[in-house]
Image 1 (spheres, rainbow, N blue to C red):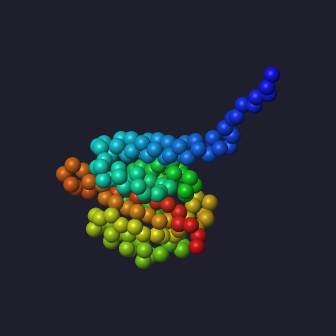
Image 2: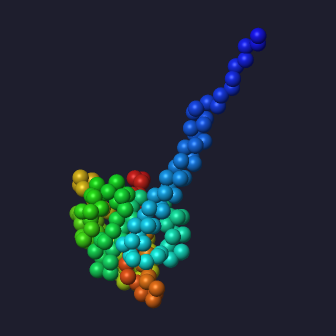
Image 3: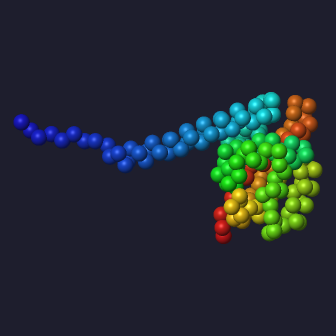
Length: 163
């Protein structure tokens, strides 16, 4: 009788292949969950252009403010990036993340750009709950209702890597 050895696919090779698919699936499910939560907070569907932007933009945190710049919703990534729970942030203005080294000039520019009701990007110094400083890149876009009136602002945020 001949000694036959079965060939098996290495678990490492198999894991590498499935890891890429698993990460893509996790990203898709995360986005679907965030879109569902956003629809609930806004009480309406999102424009397809907003969905496309969220699908193609790399962000860690999402924050929605009303026109008075009060946070009404944040995703779980907000806690991961800042150390503050999303429940703590709701009802506050985003400036609670700012501090000594946050540029007053940048803050003034952001207020001015918000008044223009157009999408823009800026970077500013923010502070985590533990006091650690980081550079936050924000991409802010207005959200419109069916009558094309701005009702909220959506900020896609990510930490800028140290140079």
